[in-house]
Length: 359
Image 1 (cartoon, helix red, strand yellow):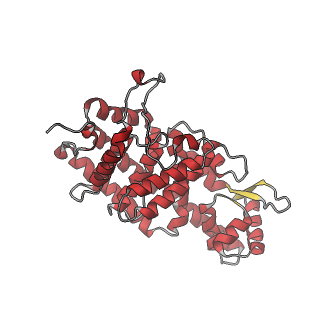
Image 2: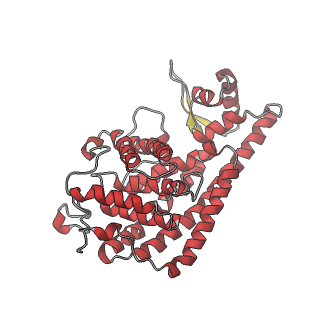
Image 3: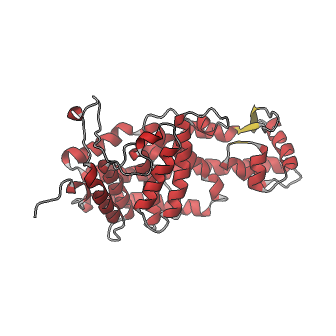
């Protein structure tokens, strides 16, 4: 029987498991260390929030966005399209994590795309939440004749994507290998008019969680991919040009290993910063540091007092004194004064410096 067109994208590739075994083992150990570390860390929802912010920034930057940690967290109303899309990336990621806790599914992918693209004033052209119905091509020159890669036609997308999702759930395949293969398949199918790269990267850690490899969706891979962007594209081209699935899988397993170790280092630095802050504030507050307020500042490195009050349950009057103390110690700084009904805006200086150096 003749092969269906574009079957090479989703048919199980003939991987050299012997050659990949050592890489699979080292990646599994690194991801396992990260998962264990995250499961034992204090206030994980708060301390992991900066990593999610960084993922949104870097995944967007891979696509040419100019967003930064500072511009994304800017509390003003002048956010650019790039910043709006980075903020929407966070919202889309949160929803997808909930929808795919047990199993990857197409509905969650479509909803994540809708949330991501509807946030931008230019998103309407991307048909938010809908598979593309027009041909697309990848490469410079503006024409299909000069394209470096032409994805499958629109009528093939649903079948190919359903197959790719089904393959990603195979229990006889290592979850990290499944994540590597699914990401490549998704990018090669290119199911949307825009946003394919961001959605594809978003679902790597979500797939690891759905497959039971991790309890929370980490590591998020955009930090490594953005730092190695040229290799990232070349490895994907290696599949489309010569079917080099082994080269891609080996490279992606190494990306997961390196990113998992880097995440442990970053989280360790934030835990140290949290402990330092708790000790400093406890000394000034008679041995009782307002822990919920400190933790809330990790979730919102740029914040207002009412926002932290809402998160922590601590009265605003108490928090204003606390934030005033932090400002006097150089731990936070006021970046926009309050005016009328608008509360003053503060920046968690030490954390923002750490995020800038990382992302």
